[in-house]
Length: 284
Length: 237
Image 1 (cartoon, rainbow over the protein chains, first blue to last red):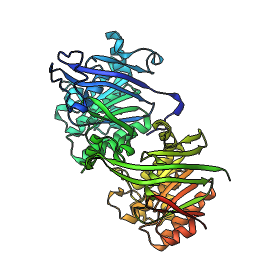
Image 2 (cartoon, chains in turn purple, brown):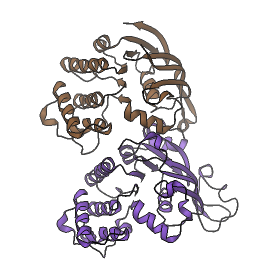
Image 3 (spheres, rainbow over the protein chains, first blue to last red):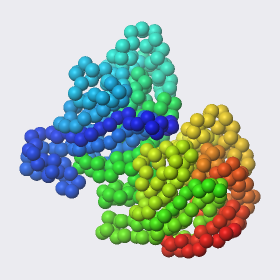
Image 4 (tube, chains in turn orange, cyan):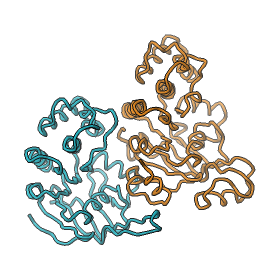
């Protein structure tokens, strides 16, 4: 984890980020959340996936997001990666217009530009991040082409370098990820996500479902990429071990709200909120 | 000597929601100072609050009340009890190091890399950092066949030496040392003590917890005794 410049300020500033599914009324947010132990509005049935999320991410920082299934963790990164539009809220990113433009007000074209040049995403399910009809190399090439690379030879060279970096046998570059193991698919996804040197990478439960030896390898690779390239990351995981290993700071989500945030070791050793205390004491 | 740290009225209570809101008072109105270049020894029975105090200084624990004024080389005075998280992260990466008695292993990272990592993060060249790590292992008598192995399966004493080496070669300005010699034999203990004394020579200030009389006697320039979360007496060594 690279040294972050203390005074350079934030890289990403998120304020009031909210996503509601269904037909909420004016009180749906007030009727949901940790105090109500639900994210489903009892009156309207609207689902408040996340509401009022505020945080700053610093350059080179790795921020963890933990919480149980349905707490809104994945929604949070999907909103920031433009997979779905938020209901309310803003996000400013210093890699774009020096942080003066709200990402959610961008035109489709500029949004594509941000997604292709400035962000990377690794999903829990490799099928969400890779096209299984393309070869491994083709998947990476697609990302490079979307960011404007045109020269076939240089695309191929860059793709094979990325695969080498993520320890995917280059000999298998021309095969589809369908024929790869889960760990290899995840590493191809990571290659694709970092292909354009994005300053910000989202990792959504990237090691869930992998056996421990493969998990260790993927985590080690993420640590290496982080320390070599200094990429800022948001790591979503329900696994506190992953959070402990990768992150400096952690947000704890419950029923779509941040119930606690702090230094990761403080969250794990001196949790303040009742839910976090329960979460930490449930650790194997 | 210039002052490095001033602790005023430090309190730590744990509020346990899972025990129906039970409160455990771990530290009561702690006042003390650490001067630059000194080794402050903390003594007291198990459960007296020594490690709690160390963890409050590192902000692994959130102090309930009071002030911990740290005079940073790069940032000037910082209240570690209240400073924002990014300031704490910055200080941890550049000035303040915590060395616990237990190694938190990083899966599949060889011993040498574990030790070199914080030094590299502080801007050192990789080869130079690995060289320092080898040197430290040699002095601490860690068998060479372990240098490239993964520490997860190492013995308690081997893991402890990795921890010490990692903390010492990172060149901290302020080191929090919790039981550095607990599972070591006499010879290795002295090697650790010599390394810590050298670190102090280079200007590092240290807060030390040890139940080992020999370690305390050789290292501590001053001692504070804790009992039931209160500061009891000050002994000048």
